[in-house]
Image 1 (cartoon, helix red, strand yellow):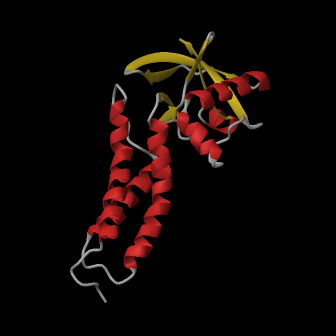
Image 2 (cartoon, one colour; image 1 turned 45 degrees about the horizontal axis):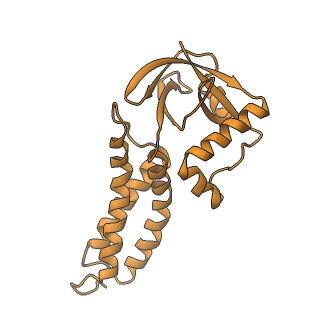
Image 3 (cartoon, one colour; image 1 turned 90 degrees about the vertical axis):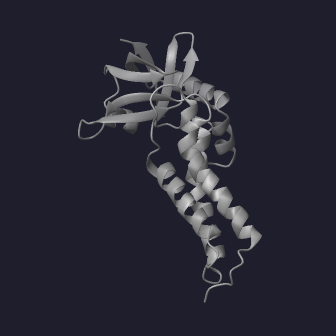
Length: 198
């Protein structure tokens, strides 16, 4: 049975909040120079879910108690959306690599600079799956497309240093690490890749 025509102010505020979170996943990427990069994966799904559920919360004729269920669902959906916003809030590059079918995939990565070049880090399985080591790839950074050759490093000293530099540079890594959503120290499966100019 629907509620009467009044929408509780709490539902209205929650609806506006979740819609804002969902839209921010798309708009935060406009802060980066160069071609617009669409969100992907859990961040994209979470953003759409937050927008849809936020719209439902603004609807006046909701079935009784459905608003609380919607808020619970939107909260869960918003977690990957918020992480996506945080991940894009500072410098992010696009590395155009190959997927399993040899099609082009846009890897969005955090990057750090050391005296010997620019570096990224990731799981070894991901680096191998996308055939990064020694490949000639296009990289979008600061709105400029350049050719790079990633060189994979597995020695733990280098990997630990690059990972620590990422954590130091990116506030999202620090916040996510504090709540257990991001490793503050490099795991045994983490590798580092130096992005050498072609």
